[in-house]
Length: 406
Image 1 (cartoon, rainbow, N blue to C red):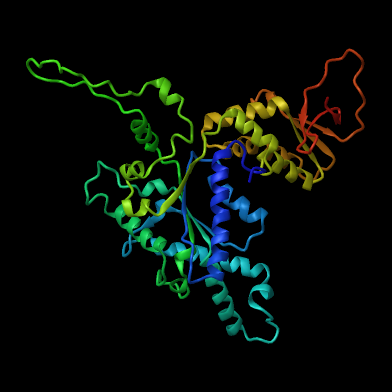
Image 2: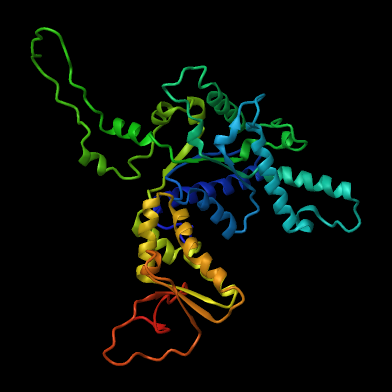
C-alpha cells in the first residue's frame, strides 16, 4: 500500500491489518465453520482525495486477490419503499464485481464449459458468484451523509435512521436481502463493511471531549464563595487543539453516537483510523514517489505515442502548492496536470520523437511548455548556468542533460 499511498502511515497500518484479518477470518471460517471468527468492520475518516478508497483497491489489485469490492455512494441510498436506490441493492454491486472476477478465468471458477449448455454454465457461475460475494468488501463512501443530525426533528431524520437500521441488519449477517434473483442467497456474515468519509464536525466533538470548554457560571444576586473550591478543569486552547495528532482524534463510540449514528451500528464498527489532510509537501511526494502518481500516468500516456513528457522539480512543487489550495487531495493534482498536458497531447497528435518539458512558468501560465525533437544533447560550455533538474518518472528521475544528477 505504501507504494501508492504516501504520507498516511498510521491509516495504512490500520487498513492493512483489517484486510489481512479479513482474509485470515475467511480461511478460518471455511475450515472451521462450527468455530467462526467474527468480523471487525472498519471506519476510515479523512478528507477527500486522501487515499481512503484507493488503499483498498491497491491491496486487491497488487495482490491479485479474488475478492469482490463494491464502492457505494451512501448519499444515494433511500429507505425501503421509497423512490431511489434501496439499501439492499448494495449487494447487487458486489455480485457484479464477483461476476467480473469469474469472467477473468471462467474455467478456473466454473470448470470445463466445452460440453455444457449455456443454462448450466450460467447456473454454476451464479453459485460461484454468490460464494465470492459472501467474502467480499463493501465500501460505504460518504458514510457521514447518513448521520442523524441532532438538531433535526425525529420526522425529519426518518430516512437517515431507516438507512442505518437497514444497514445494521445486513452487517449483522444473514440471507434474504434484496430482490435480485441471486442476492437473497448471499450470506452477509463474512462481508467486510468499510465506512469512509470526511465526517465534518466529528473533530469538534472529539476535541470537546479531550479538552472540554468551561462556560462562566451566571447567577442573580449574591452567592457565597465555596469553602473548598475544586480545581479548574483543563480547558481547550488553540495551542492544545493544534497539538492533537491524527491518532488523538480517532473518535470513540460516544463521539460517533453524538455525531449521529445509532448505538447498535456503532457497536459493529470496531476498527477506526484517520487519514491526515494532505499538505503540499505530501502532494509533492505523491507526484515523485507514488506508483499511481498523476505525473507518471501522463508520462505513460505520452510514451504510448512515442513522445516524452518531463517536469522540472520546481514545476512539481508548484503543482503541489496549487493542488493544496483546491483542497481535493490527489484529484487536484490530476486536474492541474490535465489542464496543461491535454492541450499539448492534442497538439502533438500524429507526431513522434518529441520531448515536452513543463516548467514552473508553464504551471503558472506564464510560458508555454518547451517542445523539442529528440536529439543528442551535448554538455553545456564551461561556466554556463546549470539547467533546472528534471523529473522523468524513472528510477533516476532527476537528470541534467540526460545524465544522472549528483
